[in-house]
Length: 315
Image (cartoon, rainbow, N blue to C red; front, side, top):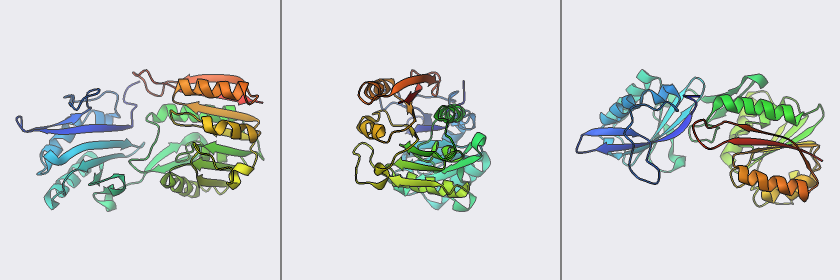
């Protein structure tokens, strides 16, 4: 599979001796930038236009102060976030705006930290949407939000997870490490109620916005650190029929005793790290009385050694 990667961080370097801008990826464990003209792994709307992007930056007076570009793609839009170390002149902003219009890119500027990101021309920006057509759901996101890099495999993963969750009418479901609602909103098409827990408050807010935009009214979204569970939280006092968890590489070790206490009829565990999935599987089976009934892997990152795994548990 080529052209699958919809998120990436591109390095930018102005080479004074050659009076030329390089745009590409940094070499492993190095500050050197690989000199590439295209990237077959990137979404072709970007991967086939690296030289165009480099040329556009090369036309800027501030070309030496552009440090990197964050790429974020939806089905119908491409957002480029330019990290610049000095303020851009009105002339440079006009050049970037014209380039964005010509290439159909939405240009964002980042003069400081992640909270400084803003659209260059707000009136011309189209919201980024991650569509889940099998569930009639569209999830809004910002250019720096976490989304799965492979949209096609993500959709297949969500379908498989929902199939294995087997949510029944009247079920109360729990989505842990819920992010923007990648699983929450599809789950809500079947469950009586879905509780979604995510640490990042901005992600929680955007998930709530997406639920409203999709006409979904039976979800609850809360911010909570699942690596330090707080037993006093009301959602921790309930039971749930189905639980889905999609933790980061560190896994969900701190939550496992509580997951067992929730007494779910089925657990679906999505993992981006086989080692922590193996550890947590051992805990669920040998310490908490669950049975591993199905497993699978998904090639979320073709041409790399990384995989996404899925495991299903029942009491």
